[in-house]
Image (cartoon, rainbow, N blue to C red; front, side, top):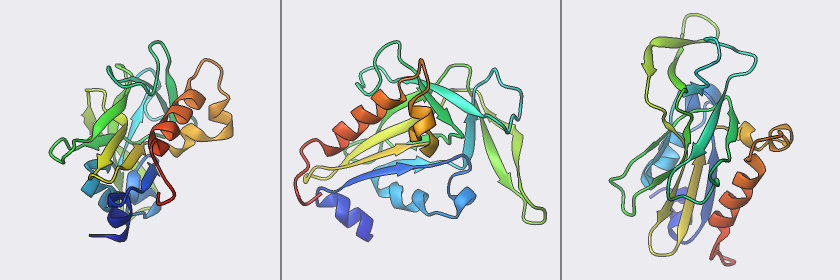
Length: 187
């Protein structure tokens, strides 16, 4: 068991934020760190289907609530710039759950990192047509540990939180409330 898994298993709380390209983009290890909780932040990018491909100056996806989840109210949308998708493994117990999905017109592209040339490119052939989850949660073990994964850290910057017509601030408030619910001095 990793130190992070041990922390969460004792009632700790974890909020993991990603970026397009996932671990490969910044050289992090979120993939391995979140696997025990049934969450994977993918190395892809989810973009609004109405944007030209690729549009490096403003790739974003608008996310909608998953029915039965109270993190985004009906009619609210969340703006997620430079977002990666989140895979939810339902085989862990209790199962992880998606809480935000990309809009129906969203497109998901796998990023390819070329070793022999600088930069990265998007693989048009690997486009997924189904709108993937872009945020998910998991509870862990009997001690009440909780984990949340969001595909875009930029969803919570000052500028994004103030966007008119977007519920990013409300989403952040509800997500943090859920994470801290029942937490004591141990977490």
